[in-house]
Amino acid sequence: MYFNFVVIILSRRNDTENHYEIEKHMSEGLKVFDSLPKSFEQTFADLGESQGDFVTNRKECFCFVGDNDMVVLTTVTNLCTLATCDYVLADGTFDYSPKHFAQLYGVHGYKDGYYMRLVFAALRNKEKAT
Image (cartoon, rainbow, N blue to C red):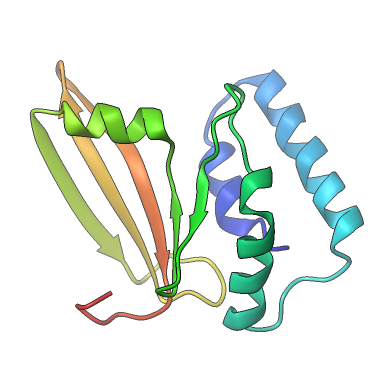
């Protein structure tokens, strides 16, 4: 199991309780999966098998693995919020991405004077079709 990009996103919060939850889940994951994946295919398969295990503190699933070489991190609540935003902004970065992925793509919403990061997608390649 590969937790790199999940931990980066979750660890941005300064909430001590959240920090302990992250450490707890990481240590549990490392007990189950004794090694890091060596390829994209293995990463994708591991995440696909355990995507239901990634939940928020509100028990919402937030890791979705599709069949098109993409891992999406969001929740249903985030998608509903995104649908009501005044503006939607999206951008990808090639400089910072999880291991075995070529791009980290983010979708942000603007609502009530605030920009919110609502969706992250780790993409296998840099192709426009993806």
